[in-house]
Each structure stands twice: as C-alpha cells, then as structure tokens.
Amino acid sequence: MPIIFALLLSGLFWTLTYLLIIARGFQDKTYGMPFVALCANISWEFIFAFVLPQTRPQVFVNYVWFALDCVILFQFLKYWRSDPPLNLRDAKWFYLIFVVTLAASFLAVLLLSLDLQDKEGKYAAYGQNLLMSVLFVTMFLRRGNLAGQSFYIALFKLLGTLIPSIAFFLLRPNAWLFDFLYVTIFIFDFTYLILVYRMTRELGLNPWTDLLRRAKHAT
Image (cartoon, rainbow, N blue to C red; front, side, top):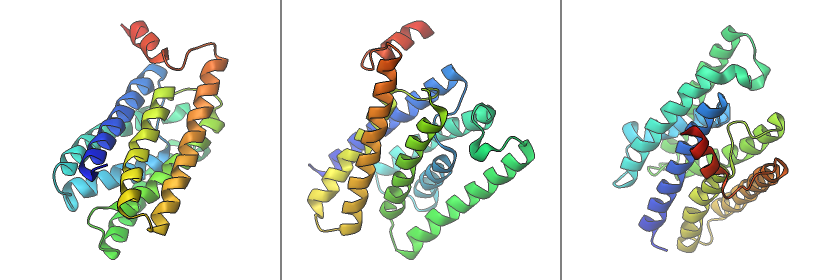
C-alpha cells in the first residue's frame, strides 16, 4: 500500500470523524472529544501545519484538521458543563486547568518532535493517538450513554489510524515501538467500536443506519 495513498485515506477518515463529532456534538449539546486528547490533537495539528509544516499533501490535510478541531474546541468550551472534565464544576478552575493543559500539550508535542528530530511528527502523533484511544473508551464508560458519540465516529476513527499503521508496518516491520503502538491503538479502537455498537443495539437502533436516521430527523 503506497504511503501517500494510505495518508490520503487516513486524512479522509479522520476528517469524516471530526465532522461527525461536530454534528453529534451540536445535536446532543455536548463535546465529543475527550479533554486531554483534544488539547494534544489541536496542538499537533497547529505545530505541523504552521510551526513545523509537513510536506504536501499532508500539510493541507493538517490545515483542514486544525480548522475542524477549532470547531470541536469551541464545542468543548461551550458544552463542558454537560460532562465536566476531571469533575471540575467551578469555571475558574476549569479555565485554568484548560489553559495549563493546552500549553503543556503544545510544548510536549513540540519539544518531543524537536528532540527526536521528528519532522513528520510521527512519534507524537502515535503517542497521542494511543492517549486518545484510551480516553474515548474511558469517556464512554464514564458517561454510560452515546452523548456526543456514534458508531460511525468509532468506525472512521479506527480506520483513520489502522490504514496508515498497516502501511507503515509494511514499510518498516521491525520498528518495535511503533509496532506496539499500532497494535495497542487498534485494540482500544476496536474495543470502543464494540462498546458503541452494543449500546446502539441496546437502544433498539441499527448502528449501520442510525446516521441516516439522524440526518433525516435533523432536516
């Protein structure tokens, strides 16, 4: 699988994931990306779009992702009280923790990439991807419902990481750290997919057609 093709497919699936998170967030009046994962994600996209811009076409994908993540960030700041992160209910503490976490995430991604001379941001990307995969599972378990979440968000998120992981593995099969990350991320992503699928079924809905049902209802 050519790397460029895998990256374009990854860009497509992650873009769809972001769009669905945004749509579901406005529908349910909540945020759909875990707090710390969002801080790390938007930091990575800003850095590798503007500070250490990647080569084409990935840099254009990063522009799109950053713009979409800005909307997700807006939703988080608008709806954070629907599911207070770290159980923070005092606005002063919430905004303080938010600013500190965002700054720490930005510096962690930037300094890690500079220290490892990783101009592609691959170490930070897969590290935060694992973080995100774990946090999506914990968000689901904490909420106990599908607020801000859907089967297709889980599916596209899984595919957005799995496809480039396979391509990178075929290119460098003995990169042990990344091999560990590929497998571990897939395990958590698949777990999240199954959890969302089962709850959707328990609600008497068809996971494969629920997106169309919601789209019709919205119109």
